[in-house]
Structure formats: C-alpha cells, structure tokens
Amino acid sequence: MTAAEQISVPEPVLREDRLNFTPTARSVIFARRRTARLVREWGYPGLAGDAALLVSELATNALLHGAIRGRLFRVHLTLSATTFRIAVSDPRGERLPGRREASGDECYGRGLLIVARLADRWGVEPRTVGKTVFAELALRQGPDMPMGPREGLRADPSRTGTEVTATPR
Image (cartoon, rainbow, N blue to C red; front, side):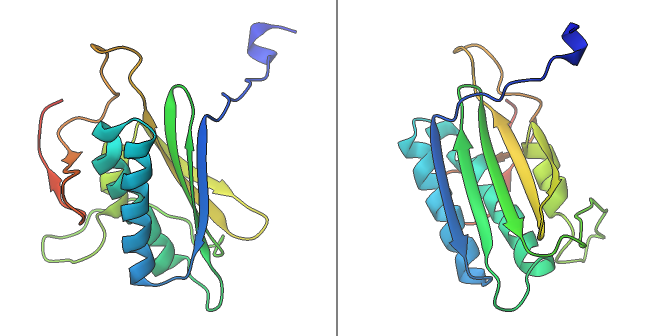
C-alpha cells in the first residue's frame, strides 16, 4: 500500500456534546449560549465568540432552510487535539446550502459567507435522512502559531448576539 492509498485515521475526540433542538428561534439562542459556555469550560475561551457565531449561523440555516414540522435539528460539538468541530444536522437533505451575495438592503443571505470567513474548513455531509453542515476551527499548536486562515473577522465573546467586529489576527 502506498502512502496515497493509506486511509487517514480520525483524531481521538477529547470532548463532545450533542443535543437535539426544536426548530425555533429560542433554540438558536440556547445553542449559541451553550456552545460559548462549553468552549470556555473546555479550555478555549478565545474561541468562544467564533464558535458561538458559527453555531448561530448554522442553526439559523437549519431552522430557516432545513426544518420539517415535528422534526428536531441537532448540534454536535467535538474537540480533538487540533480541531474544534461544529456540526448541525437537519432533516432536509434535498436543500443544500450555498453561498450567495446579498444586496445591501437584504436581511438574509450572509450566513454562509460568515461561516466561510470564520471557519478553517466547512462543508456538507449527506445523511440517511437529512444533511449535516459542519464548520471546523483549528486549534493553536503553540503560543505563537496562528489559528488558521480566518482574518479580518472575529466574534466578540462578551456579546450574546451574532455581532462581528473587524480585527486583525
């Protein structure tokens, strides 16, 4: 077997949280606050704002575009040695997300642009029923190592909303 043929082994999960939510706006708020709290408890307070914003955007998309009456959406958080992963699953597999340019007066349409800017990696995984949209944040390997390609946007962890401020990294 050549190196190219070797199967990559996933990193062991150090911490994990998985919770199902009813498809309501209050659930998005709860998921955002829960994520910020868990990220701080897991030892990464500097990522709490970015993680909360990513959960908020992905959960809002699940609510707006993936909800089916009587079905829940799931937020699954995993922490490995090098990555914090946020995965939001919903029951509508036929409605895949896509980035688009929103005009200046539109209220919607910027969520995945924010996700793409904040996350080091994001994507969609099909499920037997529905889909999972995920975003990953790379963890620092040392005190002087950059967090990843996220530049110019940073969520303010002191806020509970989805405000974003422009700051250099």
